[in-house]
Image (tube, rainbow, N blue to C red):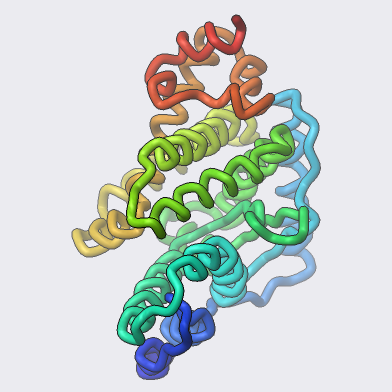
Amino acid sequence: MNLYRSVRAVTGASGEGAIDWAAVSEAVKNSTAPGDLDVSDAEREEYATDVRAARDRVREVTGTTFDLPERVEIQDRHHWIDANIETFERVMTPLEQQAGAVPGFATIANTGSMAFALSFLSRHVLGQYDPLLLADSPDHALYFLRPNIIKTAEKLDVPYGRFRRWIAFHEVTHAAEFGAAPWLPKHLETSMQEAIENLTSGTIDREAMSALDTTMTAVEGYAELVMDRAFDDEYADLRRKLEQRRQGRGPIERLIRRFLGLSVKRRQYERGKEFFDGVVERRDIATATRVWESPDHLPTDAELDDPAAWIARVEG
């Protein structure tokens, strides 16, 4: 790591855009160690075996047919940073274009904020299903951050192989969702673009923001539901240890997570899982999976707290 170079990259940010993405990349990589990516052929095969096993179990549990992404990558933190800078730049380019030229100090501030966020996330993300929103390619991708998986397994005092497999199952559930709902990427892109367009005009479209939040709550909640039923090993201790780790975070890290919106993401997991658990208790997992038949089957904000109302609407 080289913190001096990281700071210099941010303060040297330039250009007419709201964010200097080249400076973001330089700053993040200079402040973040890439981590070990010395992967043997045997370990690569273990990752592949975990992913295939997850695919087969999720297909069996949900009754859905889906394919794994063509890109399944074992990454270090710098690889993950590159992939996500591309995504953020694609998503935020419309906002930058509508905003026009911005003062130099604003570019520096925006560049610094983005670098800080990506640096923090790159040290904590374990796996990621990437639908490559707004990309020209229709392909999706699946990433495993090996250094973070190893580090977290050590902190939790659980075997690396078992923890890695658990992460694989969770991310493959997202592949199942997007495979069952080919309309979902476009739906998310439209919601994001509507929210961005309103932000550039100085207004907040609460309806668009709420729709995006309920969609992501359904995505995360369904993944949790399927994960509970598909994982082919005991997992209660893994959940307990992860929860204990979350509770044990210091005030600074909790503040950072709130600033980055990660507390919202946690609430999406919890609320979404409660909703789908309620659906399965009243019907079955096949009924829960109907959420991916069309955008009209996504729950409303009110229905997230009333699974019976959603069931009545979908079955009616």
